[in-house]
View 1 (cartoon, rainbow over the protein chains, first blue to last red):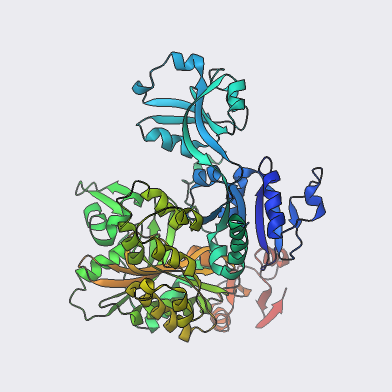
View 2 (view 1 turned 120 degrees about the vertical axis):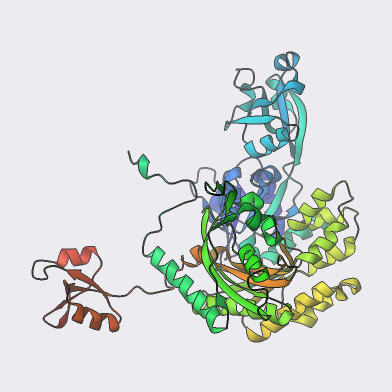
Length: 218
Length: 374
């Protein structure tokens, strides 16, 4: 890695399609192989010689950013809150990738329980920190089972009483017979910055932040 | 199975050359401070919990300190998680009668329950210095400049100094405490989310936004003042920050200074000016410090340098060249040591020792009064 390179981390998947038009407007254009889904490359050049892009899983974006492997990142506020790390600033809400982090379960489970008596609950989630904080507030210890997908199956299969997961329209929950019980947080995609990079390379990083900020006022 | 060699999370055996490099770094830092009249003190690793954690800066360390029971007194003891609190105690009691400003330096290991920032280690070597007495911006400048000079001496390049002011931050936060969404506002200030703040109403809004937007690279005092509104131009905390920045800049011309007045200090006991030193070549803070009150409510200012991180720079100290010498030939050994070599005794120099020499990365043999390359 060149000392002068600025590495921007982007999340693979759903959000990426909404992010690319923004990069277009800001004037950061990835090389062609970036758009080729069959390409196995993970690091890409852009039209600006010292700006490189890396493409990683949404939770890994935070890890790359915290350890300074990436200087700037496009990242969901759900992931930011789950990591809640002092080495990250998140100056801009890009107002894309809007969804909510919710608690859900099946009708059958709901009809046969009294949550007020709980001291303990088992929850399937990708967000163990946010989940245990949420339940801690009412004096309930949440035992989190980490699942990486097919979360919606877990309650009906007897794995847990609750799931905590993202919900965009509520369709996936509904299709799997789940009911939303409460919202933990509203989620949107943000521009985040590594603290070390922000301090040691203030001018260049700030210039990029200002470009993104400019878009929001258009 | 090697389970019986497993260490607890955050603890590790430090092996050469890193362990050697680290102790050399510590020695260099403490000697550097000694040249400027900072006297070394060595407090104990463990104190009674009530002594260490129930007063002064110690109050802020309660959640992050290990405790053990003292079988003799049956009282709870705490292992230090930061040495500043001990310096505060010593300067307030045992050295209370010494003339001020009192300049002290220290080095030692501290234990933390939760690793902080990027470092996963729970045992950290802390080296630093404190000035106790009437803290002026001149003394604050002194301790920061000495810290910077030490880092330069250790060949650490591309230094950035980040300056903040805790009381300024707290004075603004006080006005937010009554609001229902105070936590979100504080968080937005800490995460530099200007757009969120712009769309909310809260006391001192224009002044807070003005400071966040003015934050950044410091080129000179008048240019920074120009970015401030009328209220902020008269703010003594900000003026103090600018005074220290200009005087450091006049000594360190090529230093990258960032002024970020509302940034939170990692040590909760700081109330005045705080600072962090970064380097482009190292990830994380390499030195931190600031101004606080001791147990006696005296002003004090200090700096801590993070040796484990500094030890990652490989060219800091060059290893000495090794020479194989006939066992117990102390006369030759001492001569070679005086010339700057490291010697290793070997029982028999006559056998085929080339492989052995290579395996310990040794390039020379001293034989028949001559230095021979392997």
